[in-house]
Amino acid sequence: MKENENNFESLRRLLVLKRHETPPPGYFNYFSRQVLQRIRAGDTGKSANWVEELFGQAPWLEKLLQAFNIKPVFASAFAGALCLLLFLGIIIVERPDLTSQPVLQAGTTTTSLAAVSPSLLQSVDQMGIVSSTNPVLSLQPVASLFGQQNSLAQPVSFSLPGN
Amino acid sequence: MIMSAPVTRTDDSETPAPVDEGLLVQRARRGDLEAYDELVRLHQERIYATIYHMTANHEDANDLAQESFIKAFQALKSFKGGSSFYTWLYRIAVNKTINFLKQRKNRTHMSLNDLDLKAEHDPDLMALISDKTPRREAGLTELQEKLNEALLKLSEPHRLVVVLHDVQGQSHEEIAKIMDCNIGTVRSRLFYARQQLQALLSDYLK
Image 1: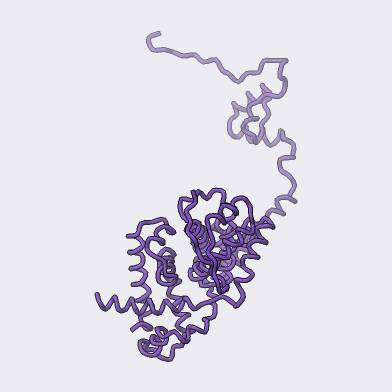
Image 2: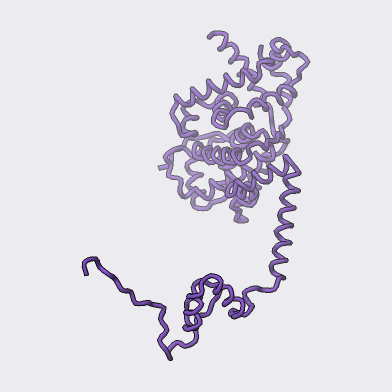
């Protein structure tokens, strides 16, 4: 225990060295003037450390940049991925818009419907239902809204046991 | 009511005149920049030194010390006087420094101030170099670097306690007020921090 105390005493004497670390001569002659200048200029103290502020708000950004510093291959991969995304974006934008094609392509739609369900095809023909890739629109009749009653409802007959 | 005590100017004037800090604070609260200039001059060296010893970087300490004084001026109207202006200012500086260090983690860069000429004539330090240090070739500059490296390995609260107590000579009570904790916590942190430093600097202390 006493040895510890002695060691702490040595440590405390070594720590006295810190008191001899002094800033450049004349440093404090201008310190308060700089503070007052910044106060008069309306400095909020945020501009000096805006990078730290940014990193404080988005720590993931700092980690990302650190990863780039540690392994430059990450930076290359990240840049490559960004370029690829940009390239794909350009291709998609330049590509003819599929949604602008005619909504009703009778030949193809009826053929495909017939393959799936002939009875459904019949009812589609009778009711004038337009097939579309849009599931909401697919069952909506368009031939006439008011002229005739188009209904997809079928009468249901229940046979209850005992009747 | 603002608690204050007459303090003595720490600049180079040969006949230091007592300054009523409470009066200066009241004037500064009304926007008197001359009064605030006096307050800055009163505390600039200790605030700068605390931040410098925490960061081991002169440029960071300069920025943080200036920002602490600016923030204190902006917050003066909210200063109720529950503690002395000095303690309140210290809290601002310490919180700002700790936040900065947390954000700067793993990006430590030392920019140490030169040792003054008095260091070479300090008998305690010379004794450490000539008698107790096994590596007798170690000069003061090497000791300074090793000491700062070891301090940077401590957590911020432990480093702060060592800086305030062993470097700046503040009492446990005052440190407890600044760190907003009880005296027991200050004592236990100081003991643990010294143990850590002792282990880190064992080559220079045997």
